[in-house]
Length: 109
Image (cartoon, rainbow, N blue to C red; front, side):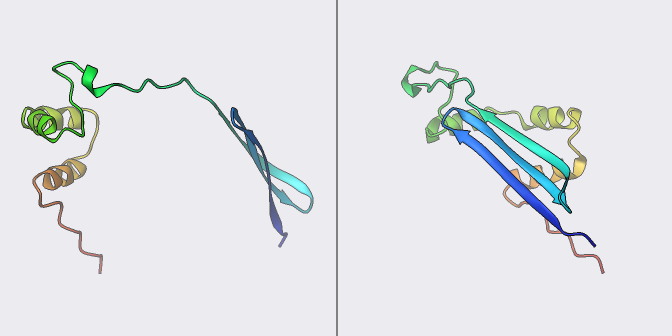
């Protein structure tokens, strides 16, 4: 049985870079994965005071409670179902939202 080795090379700077991982056996490269990273578009930080009446700041407990009380769970569950979420996952989600969570499954005998 041959010995395998991982050869890891990286070249990163503040603006991004590359990492390469090569699997070697008996001096031969069997495969290489290269990962690249770079700076993306900058994000805009929103001033909570500048938000409109229909926008909610998650750190505002009163605003979040008002938002949550206005949500229609039937519509949300219907959309999740249409998106392909299984009935099992939906049941777990409903149980969690109702405060009880899903009952743990018994391990197979």
